[in-house]
Length: 155
Image 1 (cartoon, rainbow, N blue to C red):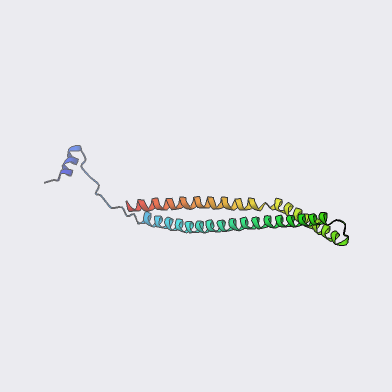
Image 2: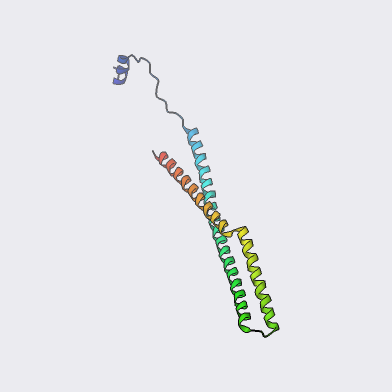
């Protein structure tokens, strides 16, 4: 007696059938594992880059703040010296030293501002913030890809 599947095949004209074979899928699994391992390594490197760029951005921002505060204090000191010279009147020699010191401080502040305009530390800090943002995007994309791949393995 034939089973139902064989009878339907004979009735529909399908006489010979190909037996079902399990396909050895080890090569696919091993390549998937290699890709997953590589993505995890890349994810770790990207996480390190995110941290590095965040730290560098914070350092550059701190450096910019300290430099601006220093220039502001130099300018304030020069203005105070100029004010003392103006209120002291014509006493003589010590006023010349205050005038020269005030002029020297104003010149130093001007020179530092010129250098800062050339270097633009705030722009450097902004570039670090941008790099941090881009690496965080890459990190989340890789994490999403790995989680999708994990969900597909579970199916």
